[in-house]
Length: 299
Image (cartoon, one colour):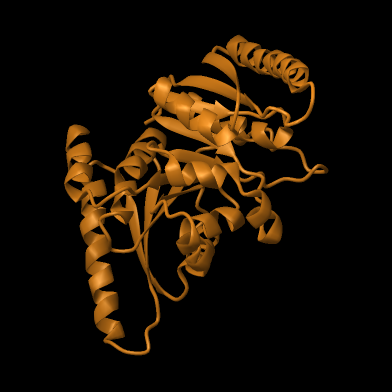
């Protein structure tokens, strides 16, 4: 998963906020970074001249970042393209046979997010490879912590909901836990229901988590299982803070259109509020057999 990482940059400090987190991987494994910058063409007269100037500035910027990383011993290459940021990110990931995309999100909420959209959230819904997403947690007055890139990843939170789709995140969580020698916090949130046997549902949730825990423990990864009752977003955020999770691994069903606007996405809501990065795996279809095959290859 960490062999070839596409890192989209747009010239802003917000976008570059993902780099210290990516370096945490580089301290543990020899990943190749593929920097990509999208230049959106201007819909005005003389747009060709404007696009040429913008492309030149983008190339100078991406070259400076590449050279900085190269001096640090990172295997890195870069490219600049004119067009839609979302399309260019996804096309680059496909052309470069990327195994992960790592990017920052501006974290817009409310009307602004609905009107402008979010490149990161669009990529989450369409990417065929896992997406590591960082929401900058500092302000202009608060600098990036100096030791951020060398901090260990001690606790990885993995929320699951009992579906095959949610469990697609098991294999990436296992890889990261093994890389950092960290512990996996397995969380199942049972939503309150007006009817039905709530206690039985909780027992089934505990049994389900114990089965997943055994898969991790067979690989030598420590786990801790948690069953909570309440709203999934609230319980995930509460758990990651209480147990000091360094990273959350989740799946998204990749819904778009009216369904997503009406119901929202637990993953996207967590992303907008979480004080730690997320690794998101898009679930295309039920694939328990594929997940187990991926786990067996790690034996």
